[in-house]
Amino acid sequence: MEYLTESDINEATQAIRDRTKVEPMIGMILGSGLGSLAESVENKQAFSSKEISGWPASTVEGHEGRLVFGELEGKPVFVMQGRAHYYEGHPIAKIGLPVRVMQNMGVEIIIITNAAGAVHPEFSPGELMLIVDHINILGMAGITPLYGPNLDRFGPRFPDMSRAYDPDLLNFAREAAREGEIPVQEGVYVCLAGPSFETPADLRFLRGIGVDAVGMSTVPEVIVARHGGTRVLGISGISNKANLDGKTETTHEEVLEAGEILVPRLIDLLTRVLRKL
Image (cartoon, rainbow, N blue to C red):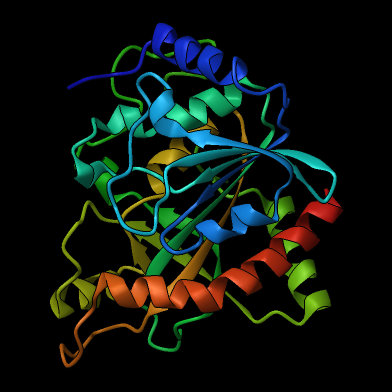
């Protein structure tokens, strides 16, 4: 199994610094159908992630694969317009490379978003869910982005994950939602390997262990972020209803369609959060 080295991280970081002078304070990773949020960035510089050596390329519709630098609400930002996933064939450690580069560039806070399927029966497509915790099923199966020699410069061999999602950032998001009258849910997210969607039995099992929303990303990135001491705000865009009875079919097209509803709400919420930082 392949793992990241300091050389991999430094080479990718330098390639980005050769293309932009922005010193980002905030990092953002945008999930399926949510990439148009990057169009809100001011004084923008953007280029394809394919230009960066070793960067895990996304092959999925709804993930543009662009890196965008500029300002949002006066804060310097590094926005990933789309991400790569483990199921696309990348070594799991490579999924953590973008977060390591953000840390190398001085990013203090990472806002990680995703499109997720509802597991909680009362959640509906088009709603936002603040992630308060996650269940790391990939990690339980031995698939971890921290595989290999520990990168001592970033963090300890055995990082604490008791507060994976920063309590203060969650409070900012709650306040922002109240002020903007933006309906939000809160819940536990689980990352599965994908790319197949879940069976009704899968969903009933996940609901039984306390899961509210399910997706195929985010958790590996959060683990790398927290290993390096970076604060995280996680937000899921609910893209489809829980198919607990097997009577409906889940498609990627419906995930992308939900993004059209979610993006304006996500922009409103995040701009309000950024003003509070």
